[in-house]
View 1 (cartoon, rainbow, N blue to C red):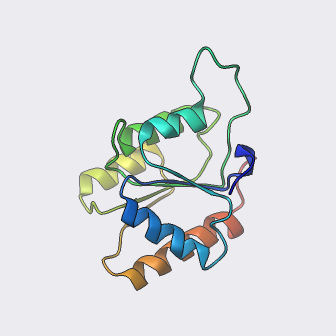
View 2 (cartoon, one colour):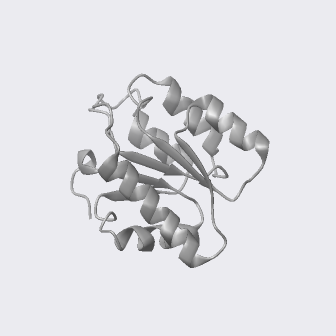
Length: 148
């Protein structure tokens, strides 16, 4: 459990409970789940990362090491959230990895145009999915050097 939002290293944005659980279970194998928060829609992302509420004093923006995001989200879809995050000077340098079932060229092109760091089509079987999650998590949280 995360006591302080500033300790968050990975933000998982996935509305599908089963796929979120698979991702968390995979990241647990490499002990990357302890500083992970799971958000289920685009509104939650805006609230946590952009803190745009007028009646709440501005707090320090949460700066995770990685955002794992699906494209098909309720309330505000993944493409819109990516656009908001990459156009905001406070969040534009946070690495974003799209993990989606969409292999459509249009989605791929749009995401890279917006500035995502990686686009991964979710593998169909658990073993491949687990390996992909582990590799992504380890690279972006342990190997990659991010702008502070």
